[in-house]
Length: 372
Image (cartoon, rainbow, N blue to C red):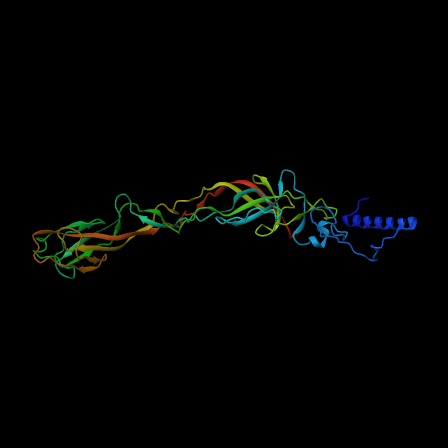
């Protein structure tokens, strides 16, 4: 039969007392300097929570002893193929990690590693649609000049105008030698087959993927204690702060955690790889429906180009223009169409994130929580 340490001390004291009594009865011995004190107490010591002994004589071993209720828990055995037990520290990336501590009973550095892969933000563009001119033109019109302000007298020959700066050759012999005072613009027409084009607009600043945390595992060579009842669990010291308040195990590669060690963490090797992209902006329809032009004609009192003060003329509106004081027999004013194509392109498509961020998983850490 095995004896607890306190039981052994008690047995030794009883043996000494019986020896003394026997000597006194048989030989008449006396021990004037010694006396037996009824109800004497023994120095029981303190409980060591990981040695499988009852150190303080309360008939409770390790984790079942109230002295071990703080800082110790019963932990299931480490599954086959896994390493442990270990202490895990998590900290913000770039900060200093605590050293593995013999005082904390987890004194050996196992490994440092990146933790917690953050996807970042790809910031795909916002898509919209615009109508573009066909290969043969865009918005066009014709303009006629008159020598009065009501667009009724001495009309000039019709002159074609498009989106480029065009010369307006006016023959003043047809206007009685008078300079034009007004102009009348026909309704805009659409040349060619307007198409729909997807246009992208940046949605914000992209943030690259990164590891937001780092970790450290510290292993222990300390013995395990008992007092965990009929289970196969053992009494283990909980790591103190800044370590996670749990007992952890580790396995190479990406693994599912054993049921008892349910808190899962993945460690990584190498930098994350961003395999994402944004789909191109397109339109629901390739050809604009109901395409038409919206805008004005810009007319310039210049013999050489489209510059200087201009007059904006709306289609079908008779508009006064700036005359030249002494026009020659034939001279060139200038004009251009300042209009945009409008039409129905349907919904804007695209600007959608595709792909994913990946990183190589080095190991899987699974932890048993103190609260479990």
